[in-house]
Amino acid sequence: MMQQHLSIHLKSQSPNTNLLRIMKQFISAHDVQDIPSLIQKALEYKTNPWKDENLGKRMRIGCLFLNPSMRTRLSTQVAAQQLGMDSLLFNVGQEGWALEFEDGAVMNGTTVEHVKDAAPIFGNYFDILAIRTFPSLKNKEDDYSEYIINQFIKYAGIPVLSLESATLHPLQSFTDLITITESMAANEIQHRKPKIVLSWAPHVKALPQCVANSFAQWVNKWGEADFVITHPAGYELDEQFSQGATITHDQDEALKDADFVYVKNWSAYHDYGKILCSDNEWMLTNEKLQLTNNAKVMHCLPVRRNIELSDEILDGPSSIITTEASNRVWAAQAVIAEIVEGLKLKV
Ligand code: CP
Image 1 (cartoon, rainbow, N blue to C red):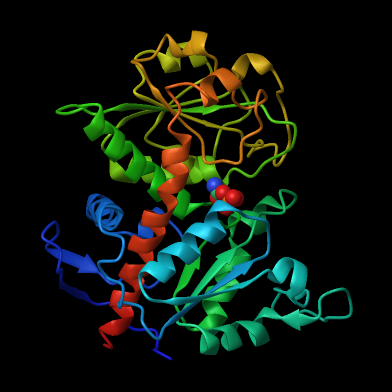
Image 2 (image 1 turned 60 degrees about the vertical axis):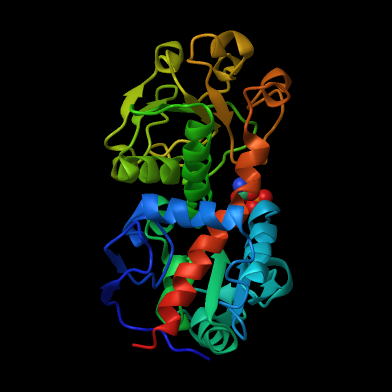
């Protein structure tokens, strides 16, 4: 097994950057020093998927799912395979022993194994540990402290890659910026910033804020967009993620001249985990799309048709959701490659 390494600065192999920090973990936009370079790296993999087919040879990524997934689990495994890396998938939430995460816990309840005991074993079986762990939506303090993924980071001793955590979904957001960059080139949006709108949509269930938080964090850090968030009153996101965006409750105003509309439901952050609005007027339609600059419509999927997004949008020419979901492979491949390259430096 390769050991986790100290953070150093080194000359990048990439022509796009001068300095690149080794990626020791990938749990938020802050783990990426240069977003445009990472986007270019992902697009190079899209052009030539097998160009680094031996990079991860004789290495393993363990993918732990405490919650369901389709795109994330498959794209991560495809990405690893294209780097010559083995991937092992463990549905720990369904098939593993019930894990305890609280340090000092007296385990006389339903939990059977402490993360303190399990994570170092994962650290010895794998070179990278990838984890999906959703929030409870009951205890804001616990969820926003990211204590579950942080316990894995604390005890695994190898790089940890988020496959969506309690508050963020970085592989999704990175994919979204890849997709926007690609679409801007194809639609000749040049020499100006695109207008990107994150538009809240109704849903029948209370969903995490992860995708919205993460999208806001990445677009703000990228800094290459005129960024607007629109939602009903009460759905304000945590400011640590949304600060930098224009925020409005007027969806029509937000949509004016938009180049991209990212549609997503989330439950309330302040009135934590609650559904405060189910007004289907918030669902995007072709009529509303008329307000935009022929905007492309995005959604991370899965989507509830005719609740979150109408059939006419999803099946129409504005939707780029399939490309977006397909791009998950290139995002995962670029990130895994970055981590593996860091491990190989053996500093
Ligand atoms: N967008 C996304 O993360 O999809 P899955 O939940 O299917 O992985």
